[in-house]
Figure 1 (cartoon, one colour):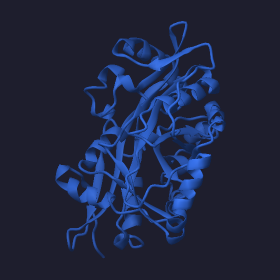
Figure 2 (cartoon, helix red, strand yellow):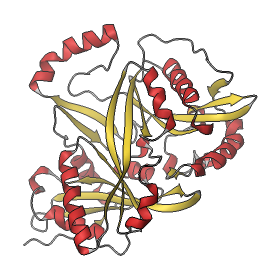
Figure 3 (cartoon, one colour):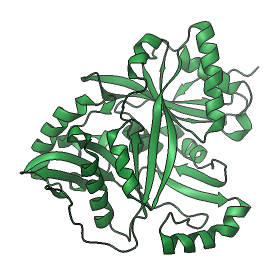
Figure 4 (cartoon, one colour):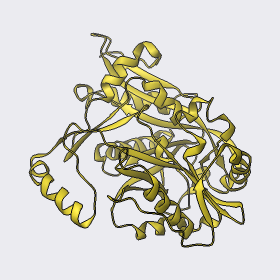
Length: 371
């Protein structure tokens, strides 16, 4: 039997890792999430202390797997803590279905460095990974190893920018505008008050946006503030991640390829998601750092409308955001017709079910821009 050993990933492996991520995820719409030219810039926004491991085939030296399990600072029960986040597991097709995948999971789950709680997320459409989770859980419960605990659904919403730009009109007794450098102290004060109220909310230091790799390509001018009597009651940011990673449509299955022109014509007339031609890179921008006093859904709806009315059409087609299924602001999405909803499962990996139980079935925060 081949002996596979995890190797800490360094920049010398960057090209091979980027080539692995360029391989498409097959489906009715085959997608790839390209990480070139620098895989590690993406790992650096997923975790403030990134750690990536690779596996090489001992016979031919080929890259046969990669995963990341770095640490990020989040709030748990109001306290700022470092927690691990498992992501970016990729295995090329020729190495799937053999001994490698169970070996990787054994390496991860038996590691002495594994924390008491590890965050991770899986698309609900990823049937293979969800089947793997069921096997991991059966083994974990039998052998006393950490296993996946389902916490709740992540509601990922793709909002199409309207064809015609409008002049935003607020429906509430508050002002909405983009932030400026002078707003940083007030934004940090609002953040420090509101973020600890939400489980697993990532910690931010707005004064470090220009200097810390965890905030790569973020700018204070891309934050939207909601103010009432000159006091911040809500904020959110938009993040262009094209320099970090891009989603490419590799191919459509035959039926969708034939119907695509007619679907696009219908969606153009009635409003809906445009399907670009195969080979295109999606022009997405991501919502992040959303904090609203009292989780007011009407304020969140106003933020989204303001973004859709002000984002440049020549650069972006879609705004992508994510919320916990338990978040009060989810109801704001009902106001938008041109949207597509996708599901994800949010898990905590742990061998301490009593520790995890307090989080299940309750509101949590998982930033889709950092998945």
